[in-house]
Image 1 (cartoon, helix red, strand yellow):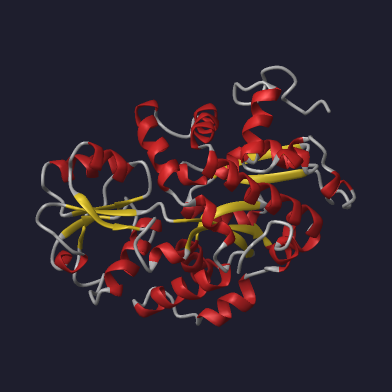
Image 2: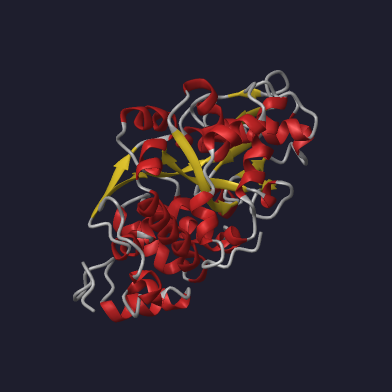
Length: 350
């Protein structure tokens, strides 16, 4: 079978044989044109166009690795549209995006504030965020009265996650913490100079700090409970797209979730995909690879995504960042039907 964009040396610098070998590592050879009888009998997607949100987080690697899998699922017009976390609600309202990876706490916060037409569809990965402390702090509780960096914008992903973490140990994130709202590069310099007591971020920031011997891990969400027991990022879809295109939604989910396996088993290949897409600075390469090796992508089969929505909605409600009860979020803004239809095929354990 002659695969689109992999005729000679087309996809991410790999020839067809190399790409198929890597796909087979994750048990996805079936999805790469090596005998796709399993879904050949399914109806084709209602639309062959799909728009997926692109942004900087390295942890979203499966979204990019899934590109050829999505084409095999019947999406001939695959578009990546750029948009940061705060912009996502606007993109949904304007109808400029169909499927997106998203940090669950930020989505919950934006849903209450902006009511975008969105549905949570599945979990993507566990972990990735890390809280790094200076030598002046030994535990999260030691951050009371201290100065921290949790992103350049208030109520963005790192700030919301940090708020949940400090509240979990009895601190008030609104009164007990001093925040500095600057860019990441400036924050890393300030941390190195001893002007900050803690630094909260997704990769590659924490990995770079640790590699340079600056600070120590206070919380590693890849392994530390309770954060490691829930999804950090999930897959969401624009409500109209999901409702009008159930087959396309199911096929897109299957491709993205299968891409998780490829990233888990071959992070070096995932790195090459990100490199081709120019997602990060060249100087950050080794930190991105470290993150791809550490994030537990393979756990996506083990956790029920609804538990994640309930967990983070409760955490944000406790600190006064939202008012909506978790069950209301789940009833109005989730659609697990497509994921449930794939449960047996993809061997999910929950």
